Length: 278
Image (cartoon, rainbow, N blue to C red; front, top):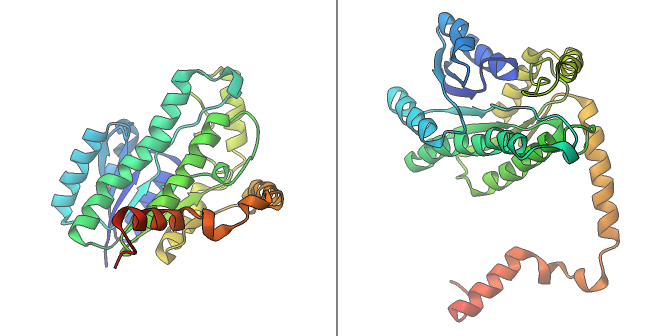
């Protein structure tokens, strides 16, 4: 049965590949991107397109309302729009930091919220996917500190989403490794830096392969979707650090039942309400 599918950041890279793959499956696809000109060939194929900045919440909510009414609901949503932010953290400007987080984090949250809210209110089942990165899993390489921070935020946010959403709505996080997209170029960076970014990204996996793996993972309901074995190297190092930290927890902090926050919340509720809740 044909689904109604939303893809942000659909003008290029993984987003374009997702839109094209779903369209070839017979789904009703809406491709959203700030670069309306780059969507023209998708529109020529019959894919619905909308020019939109995902950091503009009001515009995004209005678009969601329009699509929801036109299609009598939405089934799958990919919060895929993202930008890079290269350079050392010591030299990063506030403007670069804000731009990266406004798209990668706030834009992703807004995309999911405007559609998931309608799914939840209507009782409609749905699947959400947010594009993180191998940078979500741990340190991959220097020179991408703000981007890495934004993708850590995406994973943390999605982990909370999956515990807050109704059971009828699943959420996945795509954590792609090196993929041949245009994200290696950073606005305002030198031509030398961007040339290096393009050269590195050209070494990556075909976005069509990543899109196929993503759709399969979302269909299974996987929380994490990986596309490159090399991405696990960052996670392995992170896990080793976490494991070592917990081996050094002070004796007073080892009582799990006492200090687990859900248990503390329950005890506080009982104290404030005058006894155990029924």
